[in-house]
Length: 118
Length: 405
Image (cartoon, rainbow over all chains, first blue to last red; front, side, top):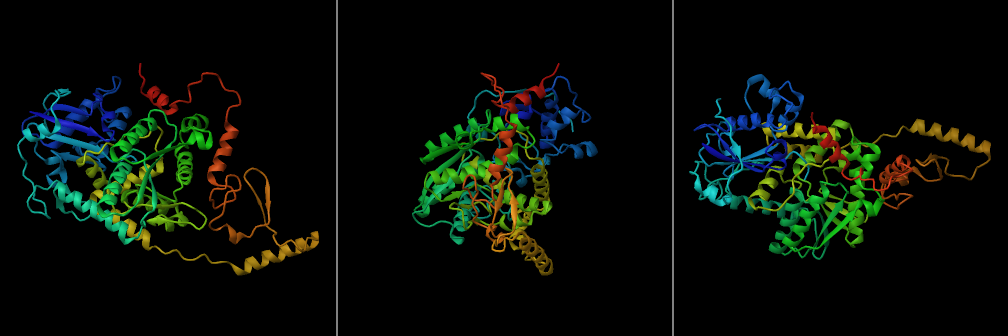
């Protein structure tokens, strides 16, 4: 199943592909959390010399700009840090079930960082 | 959670609207105001679910009410809108122009930008401001650090390191905005500081014990006796999330990249704390501002006995020196080593002017002049021709950091 991810507010800079809009393949009926996991795992390939493990400081620093690393370490769940706004098809994800929202084919998921000055 | 083998690629170009129309509709609540359209926003202030159109309406009306309730502006006033090209200032320019037209404020709006001279950051954001100038049809004035202080931020950073960059930049920008406004003959600067920024500042001032600033930091309009320039923040009660959503839904053209220099560590931590608090209880932001507004500082107690003793000893000394008529016994050593004579302490409260540049300052020499003086001392005496290392100093550092073997 294909969904489209938009990375705005400077978020695209932490991913290798560097593009603001990317298509991502996830399983049918996947939850938003699974998509975040996919994105985070692809993050590791951006540094040829680092492994996708939280012990790696380089990986961890860039990951910390997107998900809560401590929570991940404790529970294995990928949780978006507060301060990143998520829209699913231009609707605030707080109106759905946040990380547990079930995605549908061709959904557009927008991540916008509000953490830096404006 | 299992994940299919990830294949990430750029999509073939399909307009956003078409993409959105293609996918099945998700079930979500209806708008709580119009009860007819699908809700798109959950307002952090009161958890109300609103559709896009009602959200625009509520957002703009709230700012209009903030402006009218506080009597921020008067008819015919000329305003300089601080424009950095970021989300806040872009929304500020758009909303101020919209409201000015809709409610006929009769305001004369000008965009005012500061060029700090940060290659790879400010030059790109200034391009955004220039596009905004055309889009909203407002005149634009750009004031640069280079013209005002003969320093660019890139030069300052090469001179004194990346750690202090925000201190320098912040102090210099405050002054630059005022001077830019005065140059245009305007004495009112409007900035896009939002509720999150203000709550963050209140929190920082509490954490630092900076009581003098704590009292001032929540004022929606700041005016000092000696300063010719007023500052106001019409977004004081507007959440950052709503500003970003507004810009996103209105498809406003804004620039969003982090400054290439290291962010101020303390502010960053305070911001993270704020965001976490906001996540667990979203009214926290407004509540902190409310607390900040209503904090009353205990007036400073003057130790009378001590003062009396001090005067006495000074009297004795002056008598010995035979300077009986000299009323002003206190001396102050200025930062440049000179000694100033004869001023009453009480004078140095508000509306005092810097001895060097004439800008408003609470000390004898303003912060900017002090900083610039230390900079001059550190400036290398010999320069190499065609030296490009000052251009985008932080950018170079960053690219070096990511290099690998």
